[in-house]
Length: 208
Image 1 (cartoon, helix red, strand yellow):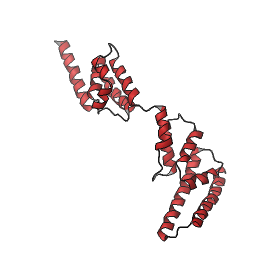
Image 2: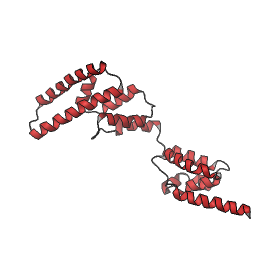
Image 3: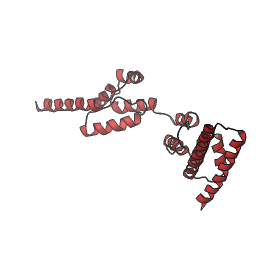
Image 4: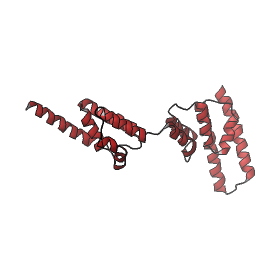
């Protein structure tokens, strides 16, 4: 009788816990597992119970990816087997992360430093700063790339500060010119030269 009561308490705890666990995060599977393992650990549930809880939180598309494990689960470590399969399917590979850095990032309305921060987060310290700097500068407007090419600064944080300053000045000047409706090739050239002059001054200040 006592054993039955304990089992009922465990089942009730599992049901209550399941209601608090979010549906499987297809875009962040490892983070999802971090979260649910932290929730499951204090309960000391069996391997079968943890396996069943994960299955109950999978989307239809995710279940289709693990049908063989559901139909014929391993005798032991069912939870770990399911976790390994889901991570291998949904976690982005290093090549995919690099592809995003190269082709999918976009400056948009961000500052150059904000774009660099996003790229760093995606790189997760797996890409050297020299490579990251080249990829980052490749996403910047060509006038800004020309200005950065004129400096001998190599530190990414210093370059980001410099890029933000030049970017803000260039954007403000561009907006002013558009409002006055007096665009010209000579003005664009003068603008670039002015920014290079400002860059030289800022570089000297940073070096000091």
